Amino acid sequence: MRAAAMAAATIAAAPAGATALLDYVGQCVPFAREASGIQIYGDAWTWWDKAAGRYDRGHVPRPGSVIVFAKTARLPLGHVAVVSRVVEHRVVMLTHANWSRQNGERGHAEQDVTLYDVSRDNDWSTVKVWYRDNDGLGGSLYQVDGFIYGGHPARGLTASNPDYVGALIDAYVPGIASR
Image (cartoon, rainbow, N blue to C red; front, side, top):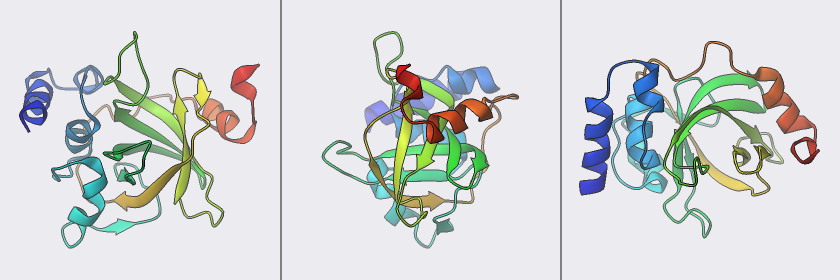
């Protein structure tokens, strides 16, 4: 809890605007809470159940919604991220923290990274996420509980000119990152 309080204080102490949001270094939970305005506490995997009765939930991404990644062996605490842009029905962009390594360390915020729905039923239950170390979509599949709606997203959640074309290429042209 102390780490979460320190992370929240770091965000609160930073200057207002996009730069402050993207200068964040820490865990995904305090970042998602600040970036989305959704006030849920606890490990990322617990957010889905904790949102029941407090926030609307569903399986369609919307800008400003929080996506909840399920608890798995690969993600023992789950993961939460904020949808920054909807590119098309199976591709969105996320802004989140503590996913890829930057300068050799985890925890940094990343803006407008590609998330691709690879679920058989087009229901966002299984996704692939852009991973900086691969400079493209990672090879891992992640299970998703769904999206939480109803917060008040922070300024700077998305860039003024995100790379929509790059997001679509990452999703629909296999192996492009390795060329």
